[in-house]
Image 1 (cartoon, rainbow, N blue to C red):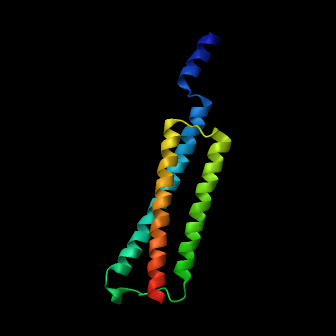
Image 2: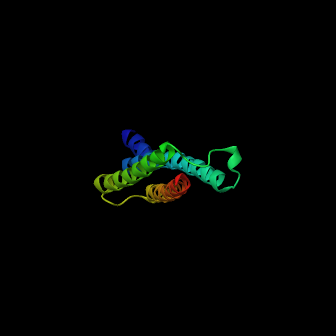
Image 3: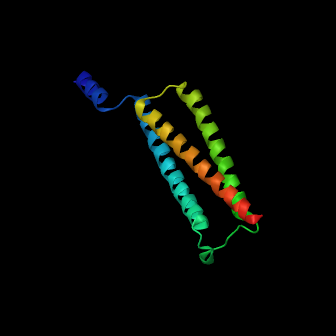
Amino acid sequence: MFRKLVSLFVRLLPAPRAWVELRCARRLDRLACRLQGMHVRIAVMQHHLTDGDTKTGPASDADGSLRRMLAGLRAELARMRCDLARWHVRECGGESGVRLAAALARLNRIAVDTNAAALKLEAELEARAR
């Protein structure tokens, strides 16, 4: 009887590593969604600045606070990507399942795109400040 229960549990429960990878992938997906939201907000600000209708909003970032925030965001994105790479090597040995690898790739792609959008907006604000 006991052997039947053990074999049933073994078949029903995923392997511990697969379960941990699934949880990590889900967390990375949530982080990627938040980063995608930041990217959308940056794109909206960029569109607002380049739209040509400067009567609806400020034409520049006079005190530089937005540029400093964008630079801080870019620094945080770079640090996050480095930390993720170190974690992946340390915890997974550089290898992972398909789901976790896809989540890491998606998060890295969104982080690179968000970084590029922040850099573009920062350059636009810098040009307008001159």
